[in-house]
Length: 232
Image (cartoon, rainbow, N blue to C red; front, side):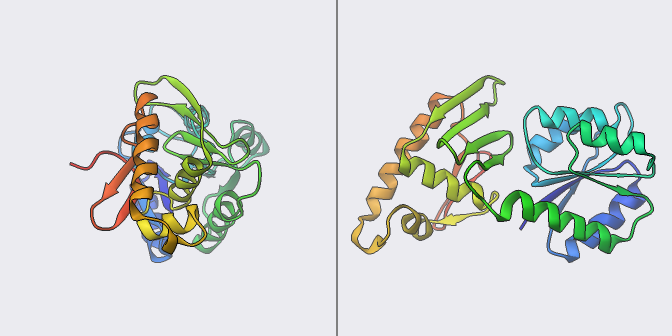
């Protein structure tokens, strides 16, 4: 399930879009505090952002630029300002597409589907997977970004460490079972002791802790693992 963050200050429009997208199976979150859009973006871990241009405090161009400092998540602008200057500005600031208000919700959903497919469905060499500002490079098996303290970090990963993180990143914050991880790490999990996965996971968590990402991998008791914040 993909999560979409709606940055739209018109509550009626935001609610209309949200309800429609939820019918299509998307998880939707709407920004409430327009003075801290990037904070809510970082907290929700969305895979796509719908961004209005005219917003309180700062406009959508500003917030697009701020998000682009930490993430390459697809950003789809939605605005009644449809002149060429605004469209060009949206692209130059890092936007991926532009939909003019008023729009047909079916067209909006089709554009969202296309952006998500291009961004996540076809992972090829050179792709960078992203989760809450942390980037996993498919090219050189490295993890980079900024930790909770705002410090820049980067580590090279072993083959098993990379496969564990790749599987978790591809799940987009969902739970991955231990069986699935063992299948991804080893061709035939029947010949691998279950403790071997535990050893690999503990080693990876220790390395992540050393760079300030101790909460990146969480355990769902009796189920498996996922990316996210510490469970209370």
